Image 1: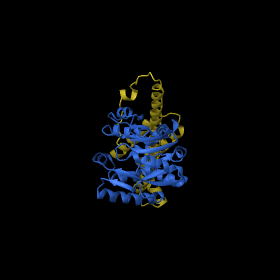
Image 2 (image 1 turned 90 degrees about the vertical axis):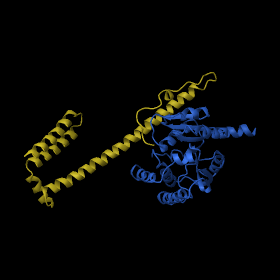
Image 3 (image 1 turned 60 degrees about the vertical axis):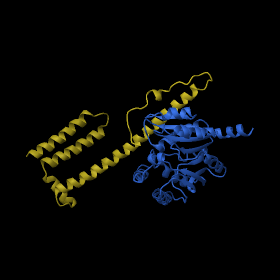
Length: 228
Length: 134
C-alpha cells in the first residue's frame, strides 16, 4: 500500500522547472524529482541545445517556448500547464541543480496550514556560496522585505510550493527575473497564508555561472517598477 | 535661406509619408497635418513663435519651440513604451498558448500504449527567429 499510495498522492503535485540551455544538468535534476514520484513539467524557454530531449527522457512533460521569454514567463507557463493537467499543488524548482528534491515533501506538507510555502535558505542551509554572495543575498532580503511589506528570512530563493487554488491570485506578469518580487507583492496584497520552510541550496560552479550577477539587480528593479 | 528649405522639405516628407499610410484614421491625419502646418508657419514666419513666446512668458521663440518639442517627444516615448510592453505581453501570451497546446497534443498522442514516441515539431525546428537575451 504505502509506496504506491504515496506516489499516487505525489502525482497530483506538479514540480515546475524552467530551463534555458541546461542540457548538462537537466537530466539529473529531472530524474531526481521524478524518482521521488512527483509529476514534473519542464518549460524549455527557447533553448538552443538538447534540454527538452534530456528532460523528456528523464520523465518530464515538456512544454516548449519557441522563443526565449524569461524565467518568470516560463514558470507561469508551467503553472498554467500543470493546472490544466489537474495539479492540486505546485512546486517551483530550479533547473541548475541548486535545489534538493528531498526538501519538496516539507514544502508540500506545509500547505496543510498555508496557501503558499516559501523555501528559505537562511532558515535552512547554503552550501558553497562565497562570503561576498552571502552579503549580497542578505542585502537582497532587506530590499525585498522593504518592497513587499512582508517580513521574510529569504528573498527570492525560487523554491516554493503553493496550492493550485491560489494560482490565479499569484499570477505573474513579469516575464524576466522581477517575477519573484512580483510574487511577494501579490502574496501581500491577496492575503494568502504564507509560511517559510527551511531548504538547502547548494551553489555549484555550474549554478554560479548560470545564476544572476549582482549588477542584474538593477535591471530587476527597473522591471519591477516600470513594467507592472 | 537654405535652412528654411531643408526644414520645409523635411516637414513635407513627413506629410507625404503620413499621407501614403493614411488608413481609416482621419483624426490622426488631421492632427498630424495641423502639427506640420504649425511647423511650416514657424519656419516661414519665425516671428510668430516670438509672439507666442512673449505671450506665454518665454524669452525667445526658439526656446519655446524646444520646450514644446521636448514635452512632445517625451509624450511619444511614453506612449510607445506602453505599446511595447503591451506587445511583449501579447507575445508572451501567444508563445505560452502555443507551447501548452503543442504539449497537450503530444500528451494525447503518446497516450495509447502502442504509440511510438514521435519527434515533436519543436525538436525538428529548434528555434524561431530571435535570440532574445536571457
